Length: 306
Image 1 (tube, rainbow, N blue to C red):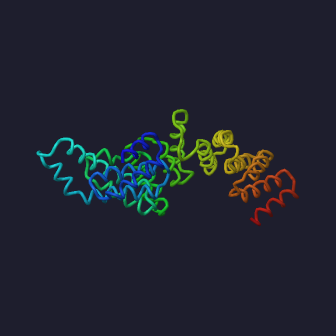
Image 2 (tube, rainbow, N blue to C red):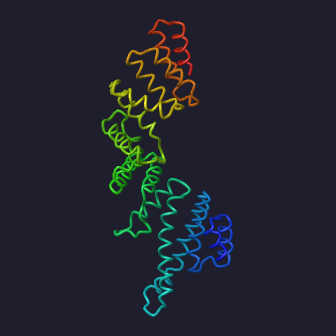
Image 3 (cartoon, rainbow, N blue to C red):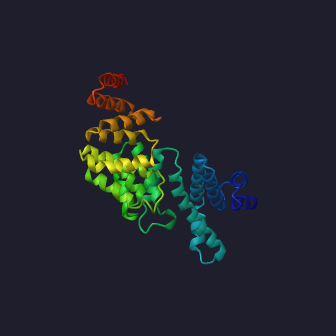
């Protein structure tokens, strides 16, 4: 195990994992194995081998359970040497932390939910080894989202926001589960933009936030308010078809049909074809508005075929 530790310290996680596995083959259920299963799990996390990491952390927890009587005997006895008591404390702490990691790398949404709910069932004060981060709340909310449990998505995000006030990741994910044209949703996006110069997003981009504000205002028919946000979205994400589609709709409703045609043409040129149907339709309507009947009918018919 010493060689595995050295490999881990030097960030050679593949070699470290190999040596931890070899050592654990000889002593899979000892109290000291708790520590090494946790180290193996962390190496596999760094290697992005989530399923194997889950198994390692699960073994860490199970090995702790097998050694529970011994661990408690060591911790409860005043006759035990202090270094052994300290080691037992470390093993217990690592096992708790393994519970958190097993939730983070769970192989499916249901298992992720089960693991996190077990962690959240602990009576306060929660051990520091089980303290959930922003991304833990985000991961759990994503699992509920996968299971189409919208109420639980919002509940978990709100729990996270109580602990991490106005966190951009949680705010953005919450916004996706709200009506796009609600004032609360638009207000959330503006809170996110308030941190634009201070925070680098992990699960979203600021161009999308600007576009979503523009789209919210568009749905409210506040086209002039929407326009500057839409233009900023294009500036940040000129390759995003949905941003060009939003801008094109705004130009159409503002009566700027030539600009609508230009924006929708750029939307159609983008690789993402999800907005192409509406882009052809709105471009066709704009052609009709400026008297180009032939091009207008062609685009509208193409949209009907899609």
